Amino acid sequence: MVSRSRSLLTAVAAFVVLVVLWEMAKLLLPADGVSVGGTRLLPRTGDAAMPHVWTVLERLGTPEVAGAGSRTVGAAVASGALFTLGLALGGLVIGGVFGVLLALVMARFGLVQRAALPYVVASQTVPLIAVAPLVAGWGGKIQILGWAWQPWASVMVIAAYLAFFPVAVGMLRGLTSPAKADVELFRSLAAGWWTTLLRLRLPASVPHVVPAVRLAAAAAVVGAIVAEISTGTRGGIGRLIISYAQSATGDPSQMYAAILGAAVLGLVAAAAVGLLDVGLKRYRGSVS
Amino acid sequence: MSAVELAGLEKWFGAVHALDGIDLTIDDGEFVSLIGPSGCGKSTLLRVVADLEQPTGGTALVAGKSPRQARVDQEYGIAFQAAGLLEWRTVAENVELPLQVHGMGRAQRRARAAELLELVGLADFAGSRPGQLSGGMQQRVAIARALAPSPRLLLMDEPFGALDEMTRERMQAELLRLARETGAAVLFVTHSIPEAAVLSDRVVVMSPRPGRITEIIGGCRPGPRIGDIRDIGDIGDIGDIGDIGDIDDVRESTAFFEAITAVRESLRKAHS
Image 1 (cartoon, rainbow over the protein chains, first blue to last red):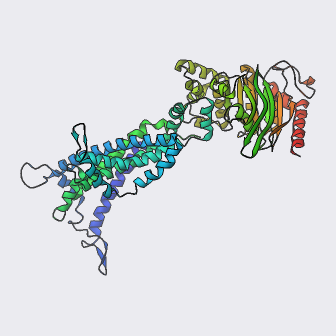
Image 2: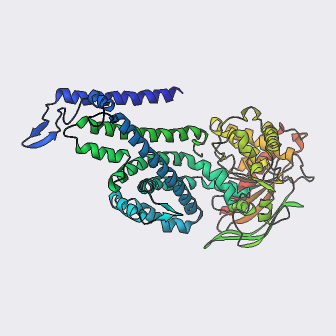
Image 3: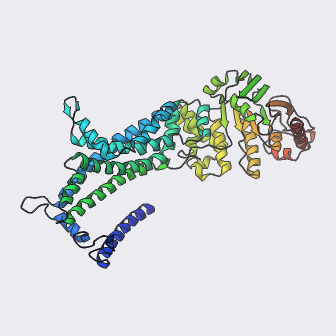
């Protein structure tokens, strides 16, 4: 418990340091930035480029557009972030399940591992920007039992596409991590493949899988945001950042408010994985 | 019936002749050590008995069955040099593992694990994690685990190899007591001449390339466990046997030194 509250304290302190640095930069550096011979080394620090932290926070409470009945920026950011979080977590679950299943098949059949692993790695070198319109394009032609493919489903699939990779690799590593002696012990006990999986390989894989899922959660959030942008899906924080960015010259704090929302989103996703870590604590010790 | 019967056993690893014409019978309740230089096939021999390796030729019977059937029926328990305890299980849960794998009920295996931990003197550590135990204690847990299904045969591959000398001697006494109390036969692989001499009814001396049995020496260990005495020296002055405390007397007896000398000479002969 002590270490947990300490790590929370450290996180808060890091955030405070970030805010202080931001404001110090505004205070100490010239508003036009630092240029040497026409090359800009440090960015502008004026209010148009770097609004004050409190201006950004203030903007969260004011209406999105002038006029009555408009929702506040805060409400827009929160609903966008929540929408994207849902898609990212959905993608994490789909990608996680797929990654685990893939790792199990690869661990069971050496041939599948040798055949599939290069493609698994290659899948991540394809630029996401290229994949996203493809998925959206294919999706538009799909109808499953009368259910027409929705744009958000493409976003979830792309998030899953990014999330499955670390899970598959981490899980495979974990499943093959038990020492030869441990595997032979199970063999001497006449334990079958499933029993060995349940009693040895799965518990032994936890220390490898938990960090992998943490990576996957971050990847799913990034994937969901980028996919929203490149497929033009409405309702999420990705779209919000783009539309706010278009008015950034006149209203920079609005865009930063959306970016803040995206950062909080990432933290929430990471915290969700942290819960997993707490639940699986007893398995964190490594096999001697 | 014998615990182990090997006849004309052969094992090739590619072009390497690991075991050549091994004939060996181990009676029920008998303690037999395998000793020899690295590469003499002593571990391979144990692994064939455990059905972790398949022989290339000859026959092997464990408890009157094929090694495979004996493994499935849990006729033997096994302990390696590394204790190999599962870190995420408590000490008691580690001991329960073989019983759990074979579908014994929770309450029943709890009781059995408690009984075994009592036997190895670790009853107070049932709820501890393996990482909290010393090396010797971990090895005792591994032995308790091997004994959990009440096997007729205990296979041990240098189980005390990583322990310090004092712990090692204590563990040897402990193992002898356990073997006597459970009536299990033991096949024990070791590098240590004194260890083989102090523990065994018979010491099997092996030589490498190809792996062969060069000599079988009756040990000095007092106490006829299965009827006849197979000693080489005079054990007349050791006195009455049966109590486990006598192992330290054995270590100081003439018979013990004679057995050591016999094993050492046999090893030297095999090596030259």
